[in-house]
Image (cartoon, rainbow, N blue to C red):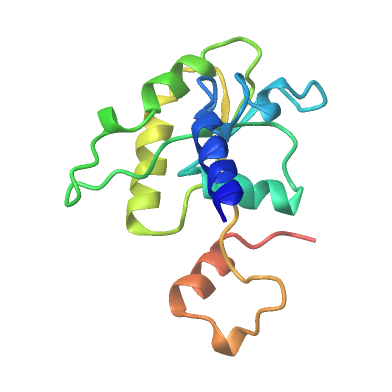
Length: 159
């Protein structure tokens, strides 16, 4: 057990947050930021590292990331200054960046944060997009809540 405990301790000590995006890795910058195959013109904004890793598992996004460190919440005392919004705005101001995709949760806090971030990015010359909301793959309509169905109808696509 002692070698395992030592290895876990060594791994925990080696981990650090990437100063560019906020991902957790043992290198600086992280492996995602160093990957030259990724599209450097698109930034995906996520609440936390778990969301970044979920998108990576899905292999659906090939750009770069920005971890906010949470969502805005007046009740919990999470103000814009406690999140990494200012560094995001600075990154979005670089000519190389053409799109910022907001991949925040569909909660009140997530949507409030998305609106705030979009307002802060308004002066940057970037396209601001968000993840689609609505019917999940394999979902049956009669099991979905009213909010999900409403979002799906509003975000419908023309075929």
